[in-house]
Length: 95
Image 1 (cartoon, rainbow, N blue to C red):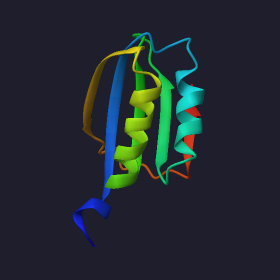
Image 2: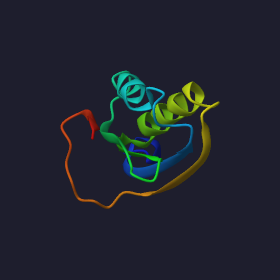
Image 3: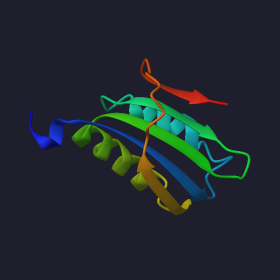
Image 4: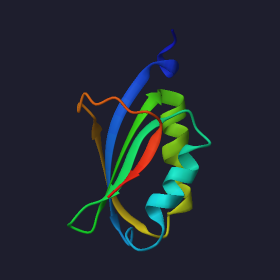
């Protein structure tokens, strides 16, 4: 297995104008074009949390598409490894 095809799990927190702009639904649509699983949800502090799991190349492509689509809305982004231990069946929008 090459390093670029190894599975990764990341958690991102986006800030800016990311709630009330279709961020979650659009992110879920973008996820359908990439072999990733995970979820996206609004947080009470006005940010959006995104968890993505899959081959590193797929996850990076997915995140790049999200960033490109919302480049005018995202003001900050924090990424860290996701160690939630949860398994996902596809990608979903959480409330």
